[in-house]
Length: 192
Image (cartoon, rainbow, N blue to C red):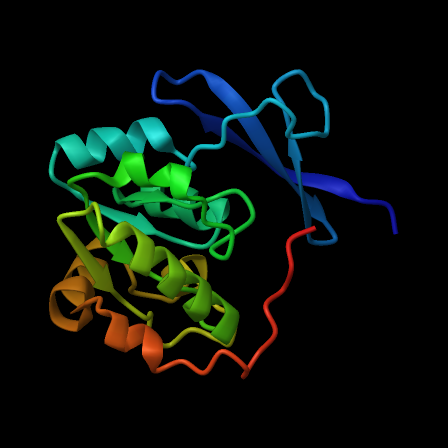
């Protein structure tokens, strides 16, 4: 089956300069591409997705959602939320991202699967060193491997309901939360 481009997610530096793209194909596959069109990451400084919007949100004191995919971040933005993710998904954290989260209020929202929860716990354990706060929220009523986009597709789920859920259901992340998960239960899907 030939691959067709389904979406192109543009990653930008703090000054809105084009850093790289993540290209989503159908059937589902992802590849990274430099601004010059080359399918390599050589010479690319990696940054969180939607970095300029994230930095503006931190400055305004807004919660920054950490999600597992660019599509989820874009859907979050459509309802007025500020969200980010990382090239390769939640399991592909790099310590060079830490500086971008200083003094941020963060809410980690994993996909509904073991790999997502495990990866998001790794991120939470890293960023808690520099952020003001880290909340943890697992979305209700979504299917196995479901995500924020699935939650938003449910009738009646909107910004108000999301904000109420964060207020009523989110918990402060602690390392005790991470220790609840058994690392051997599921193999992590490796990024190519």
